[in-house]
Length: 237
Image 1 (cartoon, rainbow, N blue to C red):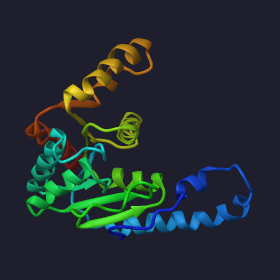
Image 2 (spheres, helix red, strand yellow):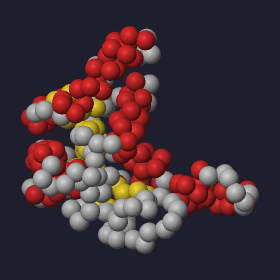
Image 3 (tube, helix red, strand yellow):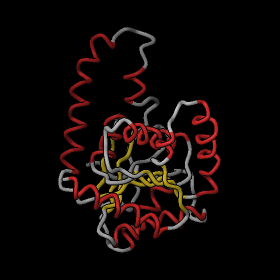
């Protein structure tokens, strides 16, 4: 497990893996990268294997403590921890920090799954368990494997990426009984309306796909959806 600050490189491991331009030394180095990828999965599985039931919260790393959604993320983190859910985030600042901090406010279990980026400095201080990943796909696997629900607060491209990946996994039944909750109707309303009018209108999604999204502004409603889904998951297992 890696905690705290780290050195910042000009490039990231993901970038070096995906960029095939320039010298063709990748012919020799890529097979060895498989071992690093394997080690990353082993580390993640080992760190999280005994994690209790958990919920992952996503949201902007840019939100400051005076942002209303920072306060709501902290409130949601605390509410979930009180209900004996571990709180998982991307381990960074902003909304992620707030959710981890909320869990710690009530002595809950707080988890941060960070990612190697040239502009972020390690796992936030509110995490009991912190793992830094080099590869996005390994990190995303951990989010899905160890969570019973996703709660998405306002965020940027990274949050959108995580949201739509989760929706795709649910839609294609790669995961089941897995609610995706959008917290903040003012922020998410335009996107949901666009999905309903444009995507549904064009026939690129079906009516039942719209039911995969639950939009709310109420912390108690978040808990209700999470509990309902977890109960259904328990009955299925």
